[in-house]
Structure formats: C-alpha cells, structure tokens
Length: 285
Image 1: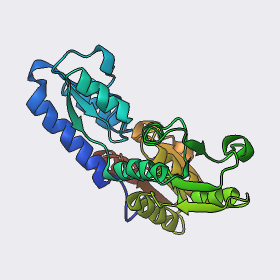
Image 2: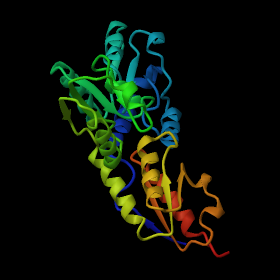
Image 3: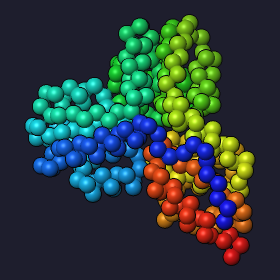
C-alpha cells in the first residue's frame, strides 16, 4: 500500500525536553530508587512504559514521599501548591513543564493581577488546564457544549486564554460565543502552541492527497485527538491508533493511498514501525 507521511508530525520540543529531563534524572537520582513523577510525563503509553522500565514511578503522591525524594513535574505542568508542598516536605524538584505551558501559567497570573476575570478555553479535566488555572483564583473554564450563561457570569472585563493544544478554529468559535455577550472589555492572549498548529495544518493538507488517514498517538493525548478531529472534519476516513496493534484490515480495505500523521507525544519509532507494516499491506488481497 502506498503511504504518505505528514510533513510535520511526532515529537515536539516540549516533549523532547521532558523525556531528556526524565532520563537524565533517572541516571542521576534513581540509583537509590528515589525518583518519582507526579503522573505520566507525557501522554504516550510507549514512552511511559519505557521510562517505567528504567525505574521511573509515574504515579507518585507528593504527600507520601520521603524527604530527599526527587519529584519530576510532568510536561503538562503543576499547580503552584505542588511546588510549595514539595519545598515544605524537603523534596527535590525536576521541572519538565513545557515552556509554552509555563507561559500560559504566567499569563493567567498576570491577567488576574491586572484585574481581569480570567477565562480559559479548554478541557477542564486535562492536566494542563488544571495546572494553568491554579495560577489565579476562580478561573472559568469554558469549552464546546458548555452553557455559557452558567459558566461565565456577567463581568465587565475578561482575560481569555486557551489550552495550548486546541485548534485555532475551535478557539475562535468559543471566543465568538463569548463576544456575543455585552462585556465591556475582552483581552485575548494567544497561548496556542505553534508546534501543534503546524501538525494540524500538515494533517489537513495531507487529507487532500490520500484515501484514509491514520493518526498515531496516545488515546488520552489531547493534541492527537485534535488531529483526528480535524481530519474527520475534512470528510476523511480517519483512525486514531496508538500503534500497529490497533490496525484492522477493514480500515484500509479498498483504499489505495494512506496518510499517516502523529501527535506531539508520539515517538518516531512508533511512526516508522506503523509505516513499515502498512506498506506491506495489500488492500486488494
């Protein structure tokens, strides 16, 4: 089967930095088994398993760790209370927070200090969102399907940010909904990740060339799910898989050209392995 790859795909610099920090910390701190991450470093099962095999515990509870333990903050960031408690309990910190998530945290804090009612467009259950909104009191989280009247009470001045992995068209749609209400002022700060945007644009462009799209990445990865959504929005038969194990022959039956892209937390080994297998598949057999 002919397979074409999105021009931009896979690991972003934030994920690469987080994995490098985790691996360096394992070398330096895990001789005594005292390196613990507060949740999966990134949303990818393969990478998580590899780090766990090297000795990283990725389900740590900061309140149960012994003094002197090294705590790894995941790429999605953490609330300020986490850093405070780590210091109080005399824990060492390795901060793998993506620099763009850090910027979103800083922006939320600054907007609050400037007197704005802060609104974040994003998934309230996503770890990045949970960490970002902790940098100001009473941040409103608003996303598609929410009752705007219920989640954003009338305020004169709004400061608006977005989850870094959201698609620009979705954010624009949500801002338009907010703008329908008579707020005196809206200050919008763009916190979207350019790396994620490039992957989205490349995936949509590839849809014009292929008969079916495969989007590779963790099923819990927000940016990977967004890639799949955008491809489906283009009218393309699209399958979100973690790897070749999820492939079924019916997905490519009758198709001539397959497109492959991957989320920002998907390693190249997963992509290349999937492509190698897919190229040997005969959809006419």
